[in-house]
Image (cartoon, rainbow, N blue to C red; front, top):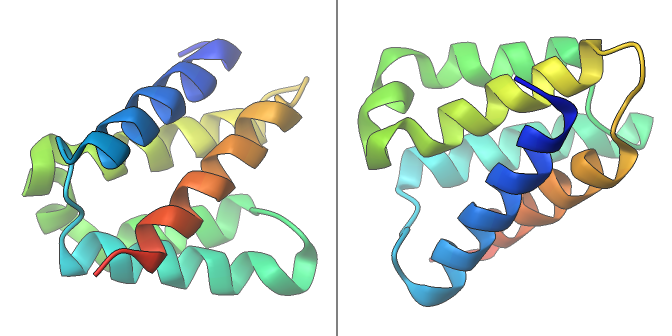
Length: 104
């Protein structure tokens, strides 16, 4: 994974979300909500919060919608662990998760 992978994947998912090609499941919305709730007090994602969210979704998260949210969580984790963080990519991912969280 590269730093730009997070941005590229986030933009692809946002496009698919807007077009209806990706319709988040209840599990995906729940995971997005859990991660956003954990991010609020600290002002952003933490590696532990992303890992906890992925753990909560566990194996089913890798199967629903071709594991798209699971891949995004992996890319967020990579972005957080990188020496040089992609602030724009992480902000885009947070915005996307907010949009997923609002979907019904």
